[in-house]
Length: 117
Image (cartoon, rainbow, N blue to C red):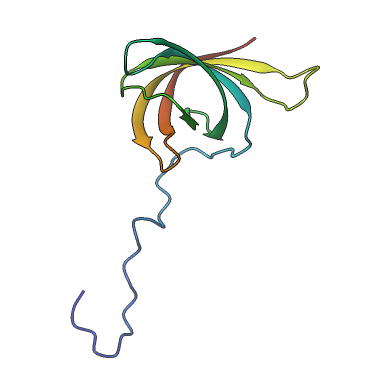
């Protein structure tokens, strides 16, 4: 921007406030079982909750690290009711991982397949 001594020019949008996602996110904390291989090459099976879910992927936190590119499966319960929760099996590829202050790993996953169980 050019010099604006009176401070009337609009500020450029912050990258943090601009939504870049193309798919809507659901933030309901559905129960999920994650299966695959951790960063150490060991089998993992972890029960956790989803932070957000979209048509193309999901984001969640787990206590074990995984590497980007890892293939994982996710069995998601789409209800909190024990007696009749529909379930979906997703397969996906880890796109990113990040270590959080609570020492859990946030993972972003892109779905490669899905089917109702």
